[in-house]
Image 1: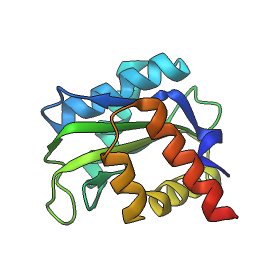
Image 2: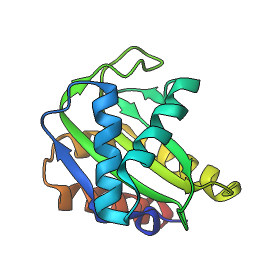
Image 3: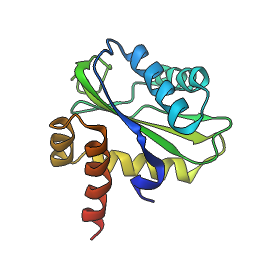
Image 4: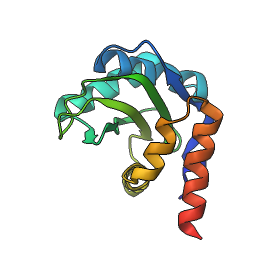
Length: 154
């Protein structure tokens, strides 16, 4: 599995006006709707529901909100870079400025877990996160993510 198979370039955004976790989850749903045709309100509700089980802020300014959703054919992702970090109840209590959201079919077992592991591994790399944070062009962010994986595989 590669990031380029789960993330479309149009699902990468830089957001300047997100002020809360709830607002961010709604924005992620909206981006998923425009990039993949998912229902925005159902996507946002699924993320909020998953978040109620425990925060998906994994530390170092990174959050990995994810949800299973009816009507999704395969695992898809959305990446946002926040110009102003927000509180996300992360494990290390650090504010979040990078969020990679995954939406998976309701019956996706191992594929969902593989995608989550791939994104987590990628965003645990401090050099990749530093490159992402130093750019504010969505096309460049997409390239950083997809090329970093190609380099790691080589």
